[in-house]
Amino acid sequence: MAVSLQLRASFEVSSLYLQSDNTAVFVDPSCEWLRCVWDLVQRGRSSISLRTATDRYISRIDDAVGLSSDLDSAAVFDVLTRRDGTWDFRLADGKVLSVNTHERSLHWSDGSHEESASWTVHLASIPTVNMRNASTKRYLCLEESELRVSKDVAWGAEAVVTLEEVAGQYAIRTCSHEYLDQSGSLVEEPTESSLFGLVVKGGRVAFQAVDGTFLSAGGPSSSLASRRDKLDRDGLFILETSRPQVTLTSHSDDLKVAFYETRGDIVADQDKTDDAVCFQLESKCSGSDSLWYIRTHHNKLWQLVERSNAIRAETEEKSEAAEFQLETMDDRTVLKSAKNGKYVVVKSNGHLQASCDEPTEESQFVLELVNRPAIVLQGPSGFVNQGDEQAALTCRSLTSEVFRLESRHGRYSLSTDDEKYWSLSDDGDHVEAESIVPVAFRIRFVSETRFIIQTTDNSFLCHSNDTDVMITAKEVEAGNGQWNYAGTNVAVHGRVTPSPSPLPPRRQIKQEQEQQPLPPSPGPQKPPEQPKGGGRCVIL
Image 1 (tube, rainbow, N blue to C red):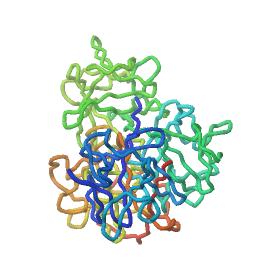
Image 2 (cartoon, helix red, strand yellow):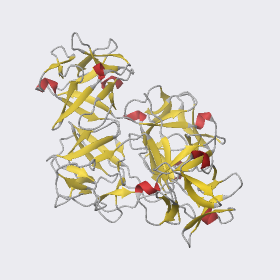
Image 3 (cartoon, rainbow, N blue to C red):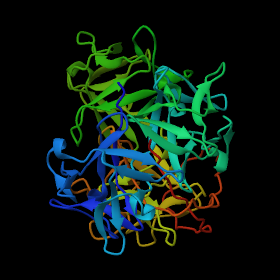
Image 4 (cartoon, one colour):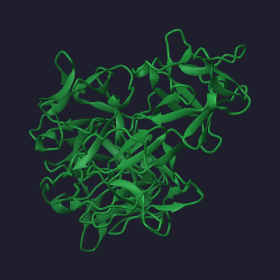
């Protein structure tokens, strides 16, 4: 059920990015996303090789830095971590991957020129994840204002955290938009004691506080706090893909919620509010004809019972009987069984049954994504980000930005932490984060890691090959309107910094708003700009 995250990386020295083409590895101040991304291939407990997006490896060729297509010929690095979080990539004979910043060239050095041999690293792929402890095998979750290692299954928004970059380190952000302090308490804004260096060891991660101690679970509730000076299995975590989890609300009668009960029946009831009303979507394939498996919190899949056409959850086996199509109808979703071609409807007794030839009111559901209150989006050329000096959202950034996602009756609004909501520009050509009131969008799932965002007039939010900003379009072509909101890998990118930067002022934390219908797109309104922070990833 769980999918571990494969580490990827890209690096920068003095504004020179480590990148590659089909024949060479080099550094350059300009950077295309795919040229900057490197896979970190584990070659031992603390050794790695660096692999390009075209399956080539950084190698030592006649004392030069080159590329090889053979893993056996790849350079094997011991990653040495400095106090400021930068990495040295050191070979067995002591040579270090270095940069001549004046000539913009790579070479092997003895490591004496620290400023050109050390690399600072930033988490750069989707940082919204589930975290499973390497020792107890349990998941991190938010319970009673604490982060605890207590769940056997990663379920609901409480089991999702976002690793948010702040001033060269990482803050662990909860679904309540609070941050973990090294004492174990939750705070509204990141401070020095709630920022951690990210340590990667053997494909697992640990979090090191400013005083050198590591986060680990302890006490009667297994709460997370900085406790130990030495890193052991209790302080190691496995990052896993956070798959989409949704609620399905019946559109008929008085809006009943579908839930799973222990006998295996899927029925609709308005009183259930626990994990039973949350279902995980897992895609078999992507695209307009994508098929989906729907999993309950008891690890059972929805399945068609052939004789009665009832929908039950009694098996973990993925088969045609467990496959469904999700079809969107404006703000509603209908489910169609792949086995018998019938639509799922709510019967008068509240049970679900795939028995309808055409969509009806009884077959329409409000499907809402519930485990992404904090969301990071990425396109093929980089992250969605708000520029420091412009309102328009860009989609080529090497740095992720965390947005807030709110859902109401099948529609969504996205905003920054300082209450600036996404909206269309005055001419409707691009997207801005400028409105002070929520603006409605629709989300259509393409796969368990990607979705499409639509406006209420059915325009699509897209990335363009001609501009950095997020644009609108009437049609989606060649996947240019698909956005990653989760992933099966973690990518990181970095830059060298001479010394840690001071904490930037945080954007104001948005207060909880009353639940109300989202209005159509208004004209943008501009609250004042606030500065942003960067990030650092430290590896042992």
